[in-house]
Length: 188
Image (cartoon, rainbow, N blue to C red; front, side, top):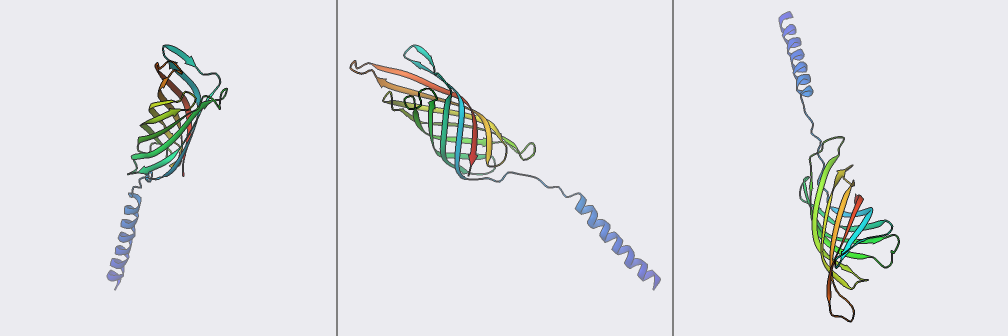
């Protein structure tokens, strides 16, 4: 009977030791979940431009607002299906405003520290400058850090070409405007 009791105790000890060993070697992996939804961007920076052969620099601070819908395919790739941007400057907010419709691809790195990851996106679209009554190709680059799956900070560069006719002359002038800004983004 002592041998049977000793064997039973040995089996119980071996079983619990095995369970502790398996539990201690279990590895958990943190990943960000793909997320789709509406996004909002707010940028503050500088605006520059070229009109004809003249270089221009906006007075005051450039402001940029963006609103759109992002579709996540997996944790690394997303598509900003449609985005609407508006850019202006603080000195002539009601005059120097241009509006864009942009679609962009966005790449996200694996999580590297405290659930943060890096991102980069590039987009193309069409923009319109109501004051100059002209529009053209719009291009945007963004890169930065996702602080959480819903909040990011980064840098944004936006370029807008405008083809317009000079009033009463029939001459077409090509202009380019650019905004370089620090950006704060939210995904809802």
